[in-house]
Length: 134
Image (cartoon, rainbow, N blue to C red):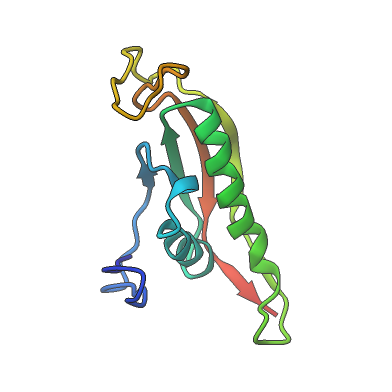
């Protein structure tokens, strides 16, 4: 699944699909460019594919969850059509501390010192794919 920027339409190349998708410290909540990709993952993938997202903090993971759940829940009605849509995308496990995440504090210039950031601190898992139209 590829796109160059927000103005370039998404396209699926050569009809080969992954068996597993992972987004390390993706910051889905903070970057609108994730939304078109998540919509493609939810609507077009021909079968359910596990999707894991990690984040620097539990709070960021919860914000990522909100964005992903809106995309998954948004599969129900297309404003341009009079068709109902259903998605088989679903939550595998909720946002939680990743037992395999780094325990070393990540030094950042933007961190005011109130929150400690860790590589892959929290994680969540979904299955994405096969939005059907009826």
